[in-house]
Image (cartoon, rainbow, N blue to C red; front, side):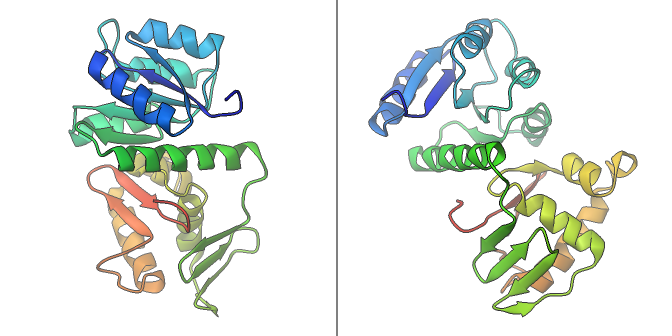
Length: 233
């Protein structure tokens, strides 16, 4: 069991803590639970987890603060699990450093899928980053700046490729509008979400089999975008 991924659950609802412990233990995770933010931070420092599942409504501090304090010293994946479902809260959590966001009540299978995605992403970051990303008929060579669809090269502008590369380098992860705009266009354009809408529409026309029902370049309404590569979900 020592090699099993270690999950730290920070949630003050006893029934949620018990349920997550049972679900994750059954799937061969090691589970530590905390009911308060300070307790969770202390446990994370004493025995660093492989992933954190974090509630926003904690009795001693806001989950946003817990997320921000964790990000001061660790890149461990953080999945927010909260009853708050407003776009503002989702964006705030992601901008504070969370990797994903699920609202309660949640699907067990979806939570487990998000955990697997976050752990795979963390493993890639620790090792050499993948230089070639596969997504259905798409192949994205990040090193050579070449994109093919069903074996045929797709011509992209420099900005289109930079946008696609940033998304494909973070498969399965929700990226906020602001983080994408800052990375691709620069901090001065971080509020120009209209840029994103235009370029995402162009990318979908070039890369998706059905641009109106994309399979890989997905919208997270009001929050940002998520890229699904093979094996992500």
